Length: 65
Image (cartoon, rainbow, N blue to C red; front, side, top):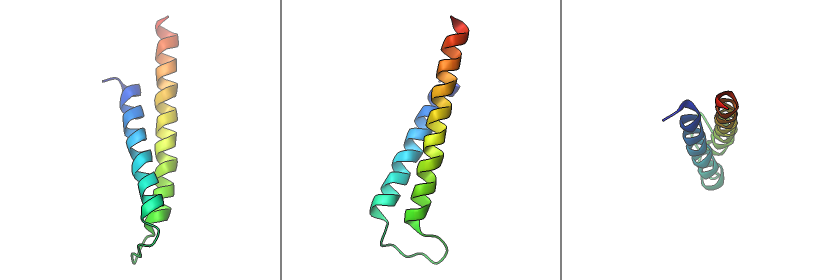
């Protein structure tokens, strides 16, 4: 598996888990963190990782041609 594909897969997974937390864990109260806010942060990190994977894929295809 290439680095670009690994970034795309991990980013998509992180984004989906973050979306799930944001949508379904809004009423959960934990002493230290709010799961909905953690979900938003995970979506941002996942989106950035997906963008990095896309950049690496485009960069690799432009360099090989």
